[in-house]
Image 1 (cartoon, rainbow, N blue to C red):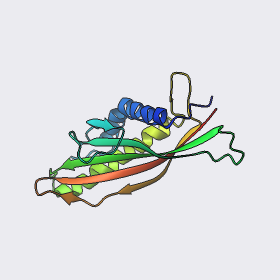
Image 2: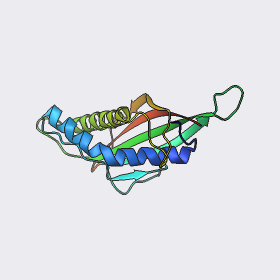
Image 3: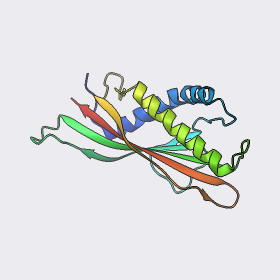
Length: 166
């Protein structure tokens, strides 16, 4: 069954999906890796980028583009480009790893967990009766480590394409 074409519904559905499933996925990754680095579930989700976030780890889910690829412009198919940005802050050294190294490992593993949740639910439920046709991860990017002198910050970005049709 095809889904709603609203970008707002897609963003809300992605936040709901990650909120419901990411903690379990991160726990499974912790168990698999079996080292001293532990992953923390997202503390707060935002539906628009902000200058400052009040809780970390933070996640921003935002639709930045919607297209209607149908050359006849029948508006039957919409493709939404949705960014999922993870923001981690910390200064914890673990075993022989420096805080910057720990932040990198946590970021890579958190992004992996998010991608696995998306892969587990490729037909995102966007309303009580509708699903999108497909959601795919099209790219990922990682920031350099930055510091304010007291803590380190690393960001990760997943770009997804969500196809919805009537």
